[in-house]
Image (cartoon, rainbow, N blue to C red):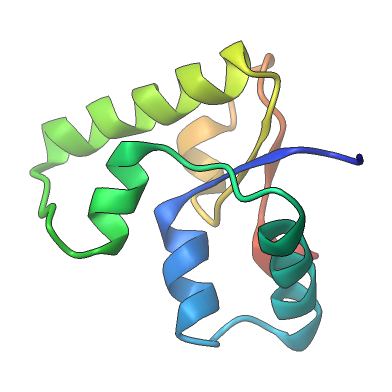
Length: 97
């Protein structure tokens, strides 16, 4: 098994909408077929049940951060800026795969 990812809602949504470059679509497809790791908050967000105010979005980001660090996962997200100062976390932009 290679690198393991926590897949953020924006990566899932962009993948389902097929708006990523072909190389990113193929890579994300491989990740989803190998081991699909996400959180309940992300699942709710993808299903459209969660329209979070700004403060709650920050809480959701911290939950993702903690989940990824505790489980030694890289975070697959296009929101690189949200996590750029976290040394313990490897963040991967799916658009750069």
